[in-house]
Image 1 (spheres, rainbow, N blue to C red):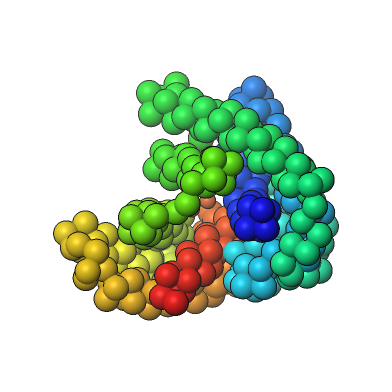
Image 2 (spheres, rainbow, N blue to C red; image 1 turned 90 degrees about the vertical axis):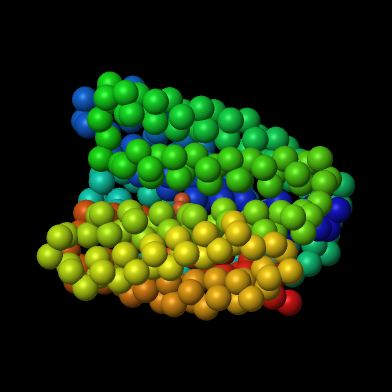
Length: 300
Ligand SMILES: [Fe+2]
Ligand SMILES: [Fe+2]
């Protein structure tokens, strides 16, 4: 039960925020006249904001120190990125949630009473319902965009990418609810999943940077190639040789996290020319931090 509570809350802390930000990126990228799409994206954004708020309320003293410190829940840039993105998009962002997250204390679920388990169960079920709706909405957007009936400033690949992230979130919560464990097979799959995510981030970054930012474009391209190679090798190799590959993935991802952190600093500091929202920069940084924590856990 303790494991169930802690893992549920840790998952919502990371993914709940990710979903609310996906909804914001969707909302911000539609033309002003697409009121139905914008309103629907806004609705999901608000619903996942409520999920995150509720999670933070429940998580104090109930989640791991490693998660809180990993930089996947918030980074040193998150509040600043939220304030700037709110100003730029005119979409309100409640950065008090982030401030509350900074005050969260780690701990094991000492007070894991029946009421708490019931509350988490309700939260998980509510999230699963919301996720089904959000995944359907993202798929509808992808269909309309790829058949040229709808315009968005988001790449089709970005929409595919955020569908996959939402599906992973749903898969994790479903497993928690059905009490099935992560098998070792899943670890290889997890690595394939996140290596692709990391590669695509590099492709998005290179495509959203101003064309004059040659050096950054080049570095992003190199990271995309690195992850492409890691993916190719992982597909060819079996489990026995996976360890060496995990080590290289970990090294690449550490360097990549530093690149993303420098990028987020540059974008929030207005030192980089691009069409990247500050919160998108921070978002992909948090996803790298999340992946790093998983990789380090595997190495233990
Ligand atoms: Fe994401
Ligand atoms: Fe992502």
